[in-house]
Image (cartoon, rainbow, N blue to C red):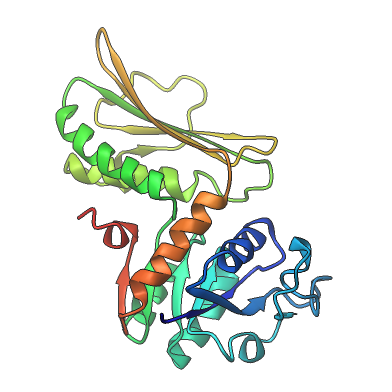
Length: 268
């Protein structure tokens, strides 16, 4: 059995620790590196210490040290940090699984360019359930092309810094593409005051932030006399971790290329 050597960025954070735990539980994966930002109090600490069983890997800020023995890097950090990691991984042929959200067009272009040098799975949500939901939305949107108003409601914990969430935007993109629309033109991200009647071609977004909500997403198709809601609710970040590990296994035989979870789950 081939063992995949994986490093985790943001290893002391909530998602990072979930990834460390998931990797430690799988026989075909080995944690070989753990990254955190310079100045983090976790630097020098064993990445598995929170589990009560050392992983034998210390959390480092230096990329060359943390990634010296890694073939894969899983990154759920911030765009600026991910792009720094991306440049190093592209140069050294380290494959990446990127779950970071909030990239601008330049950041997305940098990821696409790096994929010419190494293999990357880039998705706003690594959950298997979310990606199956995206496929369902694609199918539903085609049936609700006329006579239905489309609204996307998402809720996350108080610490999330970007809005709407990357998953909500991806849902909007999937629906818009299925309808032959451009989300940049039809997306409505704020309503206040006298807004006038709703444009029937628009796709609205509503954002909720509070407490410890892991992630709730609902797409509402509201017609006359009925409404259809397609929802996904996350109760634990473990689903993102498990999806990320499936993405790593998918990349095992890839040397270059940009992929997403539809590729990983064969949902094309």
